[in-house]
Image 1: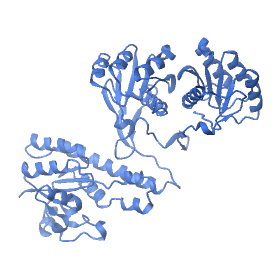
Image 2 (image 1 turned 120 degrees about the vertical axis):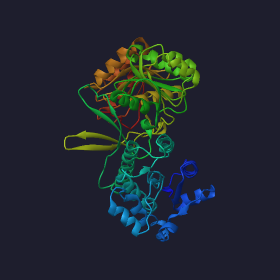
Image 3 (image 1 turned 120 degrees about the horizontal axis):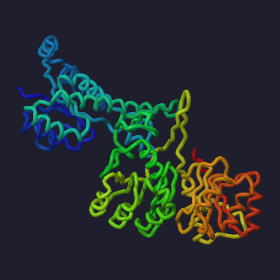
Image 4 (image 1 turned 30 degrees about the horizontal axis):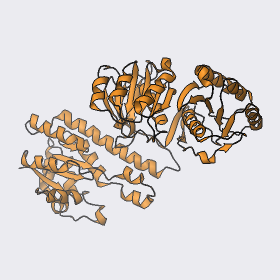
Length: 506
């Protein structure tokens, strides 16, 4: 008798080709439900609807289709237990050798703007997870596939093993099945408990060599059932990513996401930018970012918001870098970068989308806050000095402000020509950060712009900046002594803008 395969998928990618191979090459009979059955029928493939096989119609608007003893008996039967085989025969149930299931698109549904609770609930799959769990449990006797990426590997298994998938493959597929249902259920639980309870979960993507230091074990987890963000990136070359690489890559992504209309490059060390710049093309942007602090750029993480071309690749190979990420990389650039085989080169088409929340662990729990993704609106800024900004000065102030947002507090950034000249990060007092940034900028501070992530509690930093040649300052304001800083700026001929928004980063 032909073997039996049950196909019931929401994502129909590759299902027709898989089904055709099952029927024509391996003599499977097919049973299927709903839209999958119709798709197979339209492709000219012989298929029996689940309702015809079970003798029970789909009911409740499709909510009940596969929840039936003829389905779950065929999935859960142990072929080496005589009583199980007797039960199948007595109830005219065929054993099922392959279950191909993926689930209703719950996460995609709740990601849509304005989706209602009712709409979300109707995308909670019941029969699919039940079949996935049952078939994953019984991997000793059948195969379960929940991802179109598994289809070709499964067919190769059959071809290499006389039409039977190996136990090793079946167990690996079962693990993926349980991981899929776990992530799916967690997404539902997180959605329904969003107000009362915050739940964090993920599927293990890979073990990392170590964490921040060699004595700290570390693991990379993927949230959700569909790879997004860094889990969706393509590594073109280089060693495996480390914990620190990933942390720095995310810091680089957050900065580069601020700039979409103009070619931009940033170089990160220990989550802080040592150079960020805009340019007329991506090669120019990178060179400006590198020249901003070429010493610190050594061993850095580079993010680019435009594809890597040959000219940029040539510049990238001139120094030692840990990682480079861009939306894409052309063939000539890949050849050039291959000469530096140890540098990790990644492509990630979407460098703009990030997590909506940030999470930090503390003793006995964790803290959750909304990500600092507010978009700067210069129309809401307050010009508090007598001197008014030109369009060019306002653009420079905006650039400096966007970069400063992603520097560890207390943060000071000095810029000119849409390029960072000096960065003061993570100091215990703001004056210290000002001095570091100005010292790094040196003579280039003359005529430059300075951004501060928090207000100036006294006018000393304003005076220090003016003495170094700074001509424009952007800061949140909000200090009881704002008037002192504004007075100093006026007396020294500086332009000062208050944003009304603070960007501490701890």
